[in-house]
Amino acid sequence: MWTYDRHLQYPVNIKTPNPALAKVIISQYGGPDGELAASLRYLSQRFGMPDKKSKAILNDIGTEELAHLEMVGALVHQLTDGVSIEELKKAGLDAYYTDHGVGVYPQSAAGSPFSAAVLAVKGDPIADLTEDLAAEQKARATYEKLINLCKDDPDVIDVLRYLREREIVHFQRFGEALNGVQDKLAQKRFYMDRK
Picture 1 (cartoon, rainbow, N blue to C red):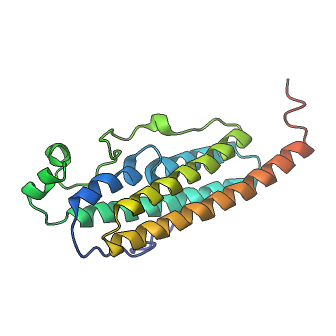
Picture 2: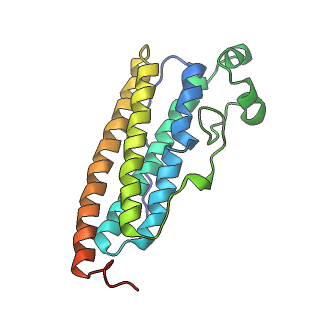
Picture 3: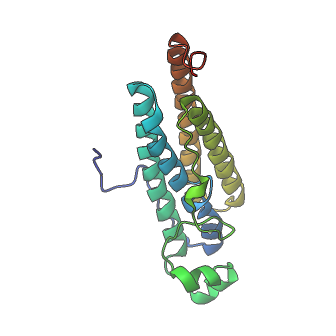
C-alpha cells in the first residue's frame, strides 16, 4: 500500500544540539496535537467516509503525517545527539533520560505519554472532518509556538516552518473534503431520513 523512500520528506540537518528545544519539540511527536495522533486519527477515520475521494484525502494526509512524525523524531534525535548527562539534566530531561535514554519516545512536552484517548473517531463524516480541521489548526498553532521558542536556531526553524505550512495545506484539503461530503450527504438526505 505504501512505498517508503529512505529519506525524509524535508531534510533535517541540525548543526548544534540543544536538548532544551528537544524537550518542547517532542510534543509534536507524541503530544495530543502531534503527528502520531494526527496520523492514527486520519487513517482510522477514513473507514467512515462515504466516498472514495474523502477516503483518499484521509489516507494521503494520514500517510504524510507519518512522514512528519519521522521528521520530528529526527529533530529530537539530532537535538540530543552527543549531549552530556549534565546537559540533559540542565534541560530538565533527566527523568526522560532515566526512562528512555536519548531514544525518541512519544510524549507531550509536559511528559505525558501518548494516549490513544486523544484520537477523535466518531464514524460520522461531518463530525470527523470538522475535528480534522480543528486538529490541523491546533498543530499549526503548536508549530508557531515552537518557532517562537526556537528563534536562535535557523536549522530548527526551517523544519518547523515547513511542517507548519503542511498543516495549512492539510486544513485546506480537509475543507475540500468536508464540502464534498456535505454535498454528497445532502443529495442523499442523509441526516433528514435517518431514523
